[in-house]
Length: 306
Figure 1 (cartoon, rainbow, N blue to C red):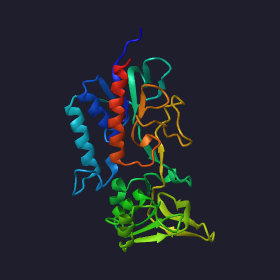
Figure 2 (cartoon, rainbow, N blue to C red):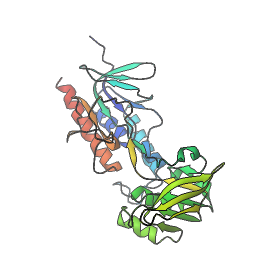
Figure 3 (tube, rainbow, N blue to C red):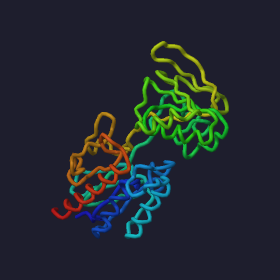
Figure 4 (tube, rainbow, N blue to C red):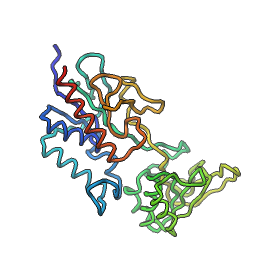
């Protein structure tokens, strides 16, 4: 019989992974969290969080991530830095394949999160040279400079507002004639005299030699093209799930987000999904935490019934 290393393995140490770990540790399960970078996930690069309950004055993403990590590890949760290469879910035990080893568990929670989507206009050539997906990380490099921001959702508008703390001018390019962001964020953006909206437009190219010098945009209604002189380009047009290691081990939607039921169970019994990696209508810290609590409790019940 194959040796079982853990009751539960959790892939990812963002808000979902850490919350699942907290619940599992409190239930005295033998649990391991695997994280390929550092605990915290996407919220580590979020400047300020105002809609997470319990923090009426708001809290920085870094501070919230640290509080979650400390709480989890104080409960004895084991977190290891490791990247998952593949999964073998064909047997009763779930096998997690790492670079130089294999781990088995009775149950598995996938909380690997998601990553920014690229425009596909050559921006990869300028990453670290003017192109960024994180205003919190890189905005200080653009003090008193001009930047182009792309997107129209909550993240794009919130980050564009944050950019104005440093940049002298922010052009916010959106392919439609109205934003998708929450109304309160829209109001703040429209009231900010450093932000100029570029409606009905899409970026078609990035110009520069050693770094970004301009962003080519095209009006989707008139087909008019022009170049906005800029020192940087920040891109927020959506996310892609971090599921390259799955290799069809569980069912996903057309975009690769994991399909799960109300108990967070995937198409494979004993394998659960939580947070941004899941097919869900809303991706927020609060929903990730809720997903994870359900997943951890249901994983515990699954193990008890083996």
